[in-house]
Amino acid sequence: MIGHLEIEREFERFVNDASFSCLAGKGVVHQQGHEVRAYAPLGTRAATIALASDLAAFSEFPASAGTLRAFVAVFPERVPRSELAFERRLWAQLERLHAHERASVPWDPSVSNDVDDPMFAFSFAECAYFVVGLHAHASRISRRFRWPALVFNPHSQFGRLRGEGRFARMQQAIREREMAVQGSLNPNLADFGERSEARQYSGREVEQDWKCPFHRT
Picture 1 (tube, helix red, strand yellow):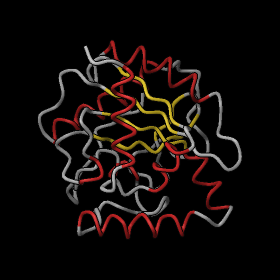
Picture 2: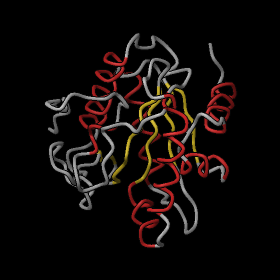
Picture 3: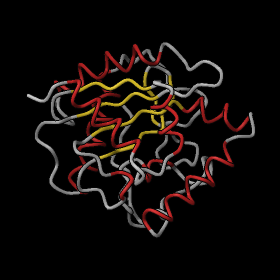
Picture 4: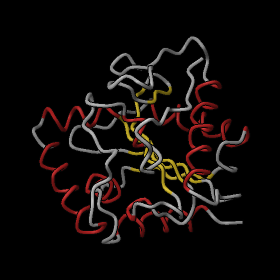
């Protein structure tokens, strides 16, 4: 059994490593604005029940001014053996989360619930999230974490960074670091509102005709 403290320390080492290019992620860890929790295998009913409870609690407390937050769900058991397997289980997990939520809970009105819409973002507990998938078999170096993990980044804080005039500078610095680490940018990258961000969640370079498997009930 892998202990929670080992998982939390491993995640902090991963983010603080030079090969991790996301400065926003580094800022979250530096500010201790992240929560790390471990769950049953990715995509399972057992993982869904516990994750839904924890993510709902996290969603109740938005970040204060000047801080960034992220919820890190780690699934150390029965890890997927390929990028495609991870991608399938990522979307299975998000669909299970959505199905588990009460029908009376609305989608965050600041984003679209249509996966093909350029304004799409995943929503839970009426809070929009940009989801970052991590796993050992990722083709992108900055996504290679020891165990499968989903990082839930509240969308509202990106809007705040834009309003403060910090987002564009941070985005440019991240992309420069990604070029230095990987030698290329992920072709799925796009600014919010240009193309559905669903293409970015797993980290895999998806095909041009890729269709998101998520179905909103």
